[in-house]
Amino acid sequence: MKYPIRILAVILLIFLSTSAAQADIFMKEKEKTDAVTMMGQTTPASEKFKSIWMTADKVRMDEPEASVIMRMDKGLLYILQHAQKSYMEVPLNFTAAAAEAPAVDLGIKVTVTPTAEKKKINAWECKKYLMKLEMGGMGFATESEVWATEEIRIDPALYAKFSTAMMAANPMLASSVHSMLEEMKKLKGVQVQSTTSVHMMGQTIKSSTELIEFKEGKAPEGIFELPAGYKKKSMMDDLN
Image 1 (tube, one colour):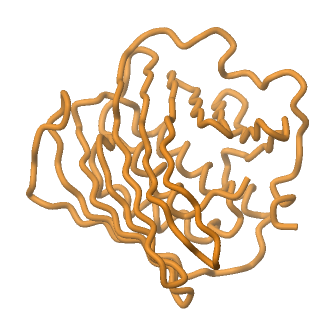
Image 2 (image 1 turned 90 degrees about the vertical axis):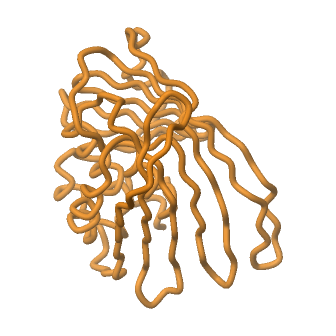
């Protein structure tokens, strides 16, 4: 699965926080993306929902076309592609995962700037952050305005690990994992709302995300298991 840089940046924002949870947690997000025309092809505006279940040592994130399961007990992260009924394994020791990566330094730089602005969004008191992501020499950049709250209690170590593994799943990002995560520590809390502009090939793609549901409860039975009939493939297959 090829995860665009913008999606990886959003994943980082979701999964960093300041305190530990006592129960399983469920979150649901709404993501909107504006229409864009690039290289003569128009991609229409879209809206999709993302659901996330979290326990003390497991995470599952579901989107319409794909799911991600992190199993701390097995030391693995699984990326499921539903249309192909396939999955990839990524070691949670992302250094091992990066061993397959091509030796490419894309010059990726992330900058997070906390601001003094605060406001209440839905049920949570939030603080505003500005984030920039640049890819040196390739004319690619993203700018995000992020509103995050520290009132949602989730385990920071678990989600930092999840974020790292997700980034390691993209071999082209392996060399930048450490520096990106260090910078992301400036963002305190869980993303409640964000707007992002992606600049590439002379075009700007705008998107927004919003946390629309949060609850504590018991994760559904079997949700962290691989589905029957899915076949394993290599993480390098998408580069061929």
